[in-house]
Amino acid sequence: MEKLNNFFKLNERKTSVRTEVIAGLTTFVTMAYILPVNMNILSAAGLDSGAVFMATAISAVIGTMLMGLFAGLPFAQAPGMGLNAFFAYTVVLTMGYDPSFALAAVLVEGLIFILLSVTNIRSQLMESIPKQLRLSISAGIGLFIMFIGFQNAKIIIGDPATLVAVNPNLTEAAIALSIIGIIITIVLWVKQVKGALLIGIFATWILGMIAQLAGWYQINVDSGLFSLFPSGVLSLPPSISPTIGLCFSGIKTAFSSPGNIIQFLMVVLTFLYVDIFDTLGTFAGVATKAKLIDENGNFPGSKRAFTSDAIATTCGAILGTSTVTTFVESASGVEEGGRTGLTAVTTAILFLLAIPFFPIIKAIPGFATAPALIMVGIMMCEPMKEFQWDKADVIIPGVFSIIFMVVGYSISAGIMWGIMSYLLVKTIQGRAKDPGIILWVLGVLFVIKLFIFPIIETYL
Image (cartoon, rainbow, N blue to C red; front, top):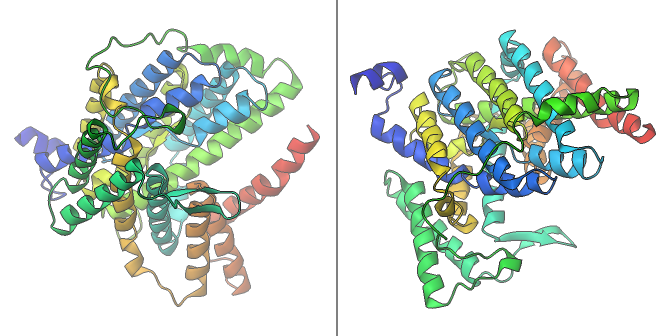
C-alpha cells in the first residue's frame, strides 16, 4: 500500500486507494458504451465488427494505462466519438475510400501528434489559452456532457421544427427509469454518499431489469430497446487479425495519385485538428475540475499526457480503430475524487477485463448511465464562479465557446469560436498584441478551416 501511495502521490493529492479505485470504476462504466458503439459505427464502414471491438478495447487499455503510469493523471482514453463518425460516414461512405485509407490517415495523424507532443508544442497551445476561456471550456464541456446524458435518456429528442425538443412521452419505461435514476443520483450526491454516480448507474439498471420482469419495460429492437439482462457471462475474444496492420496497405492507396494525396492530407488535417482541440478542451476542463491547474494555468504531467494521447492514437490505427482521444467522461471519475494515475490504471484494467465479459457490459443501457453524465455536467459548471462576467473580452468568447460546444455538438467547435471571438474583441479594444502569436496563428488556421477548406473541397 505504501508503494502505491508513493508511486501515484496519493497523499500529495489528498486521495486514497479506495477513492481512486471507485473513481476509475465510475469512469469506466460511464464510457464503456464506446465498446459497442464504436464497433457498430466502424463496422458500417466495412470493418470486421469483432476485430473493431478488440481494437477499441485494446487501444483503450494502452492509452489509459499510459495516462495513468506515464503521465500520472486520472484521464481515460478510447476511440473518440465524432472522429469515428467522420471516419466511417465521411471518409469511407461519402468520399468512397477503403477503410484502410482512413486508418492510414489516423496513423499519420498519430505520428504527427507524437512529434508535436515531444517538441512541447501541444503544451504551449494549451498554456496559450487564457484562464477565463479555460473556465468557459470547462463549463461548456460540462453542459455538452449533460446534453449527451439527456439524449441517452431520450428526455431530449430530435425535432424537425426546432431541431431538439423535450420528449412529450416522459412516462415511457426507459425515460421514466432514467428520470428516477437522476433523482436517485441527486439524492446520493446531495447526501455526499461516496460512489454516488456509480451507485446511481447500477441502481437504475437494476430497476430496469425489475421493470422488464414486470412487463413495464418492453423490448423493441427497432426503437433501440434491448433486453436489460446479459445474454451470457463470458465469451471468447473475437479475432483482431482482420484489422491489425490494415493501415499500412492504405498508405499505398493514399499516395497512388495526386488527387488521392490531396484528399489524404485533408483527411489527416481534419483528424489532427479535431483531435488536438478536443483533447486540449478535455484536458483544460477536466484538469480544472480536478483542481490540478496551477496559478499559471498549467497542470502536472501535461507533456506526458499529450504524448500518451499521441501514442494511443498511433497504436489504435495499427490495431484497426479510429482516433483515440481523452474522454470527457473522465470527469465522472474526477467528480468521484479521482486525482491520480491510479484512477486511469483502474479504468484500463477494467477495459482489459471487459473483453471476455462483453455480454454483461453491453447490457448496461444508455438510460442507466445518463444520470451520471447529467450530474457530471452540472458539477463541471462549478468553475464558472470565478468567471468575470463584467468584461467583454471574457463574456463574449466565453459564451461563444459554451454555446458552440453544446449546439454545435463539438468541443473543438467551442474552442475554435471562443478563440476567434476573443481575438476579435481584443482587436476592437485596441489590444491585438495581448493574445500572443500562438493564438493569432490558431485564429488564422481556424479561418482557413472554416472558409478556405470548403472552397478547395468544392473544386476538387
